[in-house]
Length: 479
Ligand code: AMP
Ligand code: MG
Image (tube, rainbow, N blue to C red; front, side, top):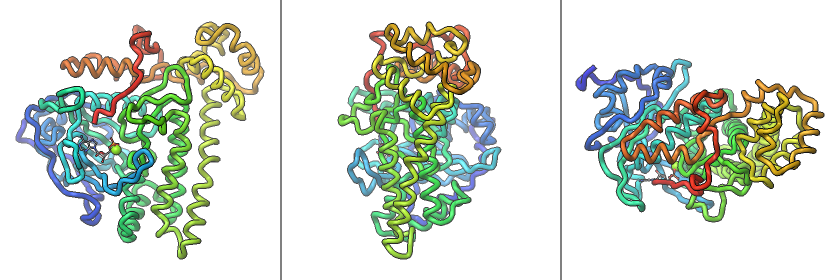
């Protein structure tokens, strides 16, 4: 396929059919010298797109935004949001452009979006661009999350733009990520219309979301309940992996229940519930242990936004909102306990898991390896697990664990507890090499993380926590 044969993508753009005030139509801004960094062949196949065409000259033109493929209707979505608790009535895609939607091979509607593709009417002071580093980070971490079984947006491709992006650190090579999502509709999208008292917009958006994400949901109340359930489940999954999103603003919380907007995100190593990474999160609002509560707070913002649709009278609407929100703690708890039970291999009322987490926090034991080594302990080899804790610290817990009802099946434990997560120092290493034009570490890391539950020969180093001097204390938004 040559440059003149455009990509054939069967777009069907339902968001673009919503009223004009939902978005701004515009073309991506072309870049000087696009070069392919990565194509996600498996995901391309899932989308019914031939990976070879993506890697062709026409593919590169499409993925860089230089020439959107036929059928694309590029637009930037409008939204609002609470950022670190503070209200912003006007945000929107400041550096992302939705090309359109396609149906995948399972009949699911998916967004194709370029992130870092130039300024939009919502860019405010921003340049609409992304440095290559954050593009690589989102690629690595979102694909790792998918392999770990967590609902997430996906990475279809990464390109280098050949143009520098100016940031605090100085000029950095630019990049564009092609992101795939069930949709990019956020809590903040509803807030956008609610803040404008645009009841019609709110209703159309709710109908769109129901049809697209929760076809069984009845009305706005049903939609709210469905989003609450999806988010409770999602956040419990994050917690069960030691994942810290880093910027759980309402504009970064998706209606579909996928993890979205990987910025200063990170996986925890030594367990500390107060752990945060984002340097912009000074107060620790989005620290690991706060995530379930922040989730609930964000969902209450969604409920407030939906009030005009929730009842005939305001009292009725408020009651419906309270009712839906009231279910969150129990939904979260049930999911968290189920995850913990799976991770420990015993039937658990939460107490045994909670005690282990307490011991882990005292010892700052590696989150991932502690759970992973339960599999060896189940086979009679307690040494790797005990090595993460001070002498005798686990004596009583291990005794109680062995006595608890449950299977403690080593294979099941290995299937529930990953060996490999995107450790921060490995991600940083891949990014630094990427900046030098060496994508081998990025590729090697992705290959390991594609099979996170399987011990891979010769890949031992990818399972290890950062050694002293390698530890990454803060991650950067890189906006
Ligand atoms: P985030 O919290 O990183 O998801 O971004 C918050 C808001 O800032 C969103 O509206 C983004 O589109 C916008 N934004 C972030 N970085 C840039 C940038 N470099 N140029 C323009 N807008 C940006
Ligand atoms: Mg965002």
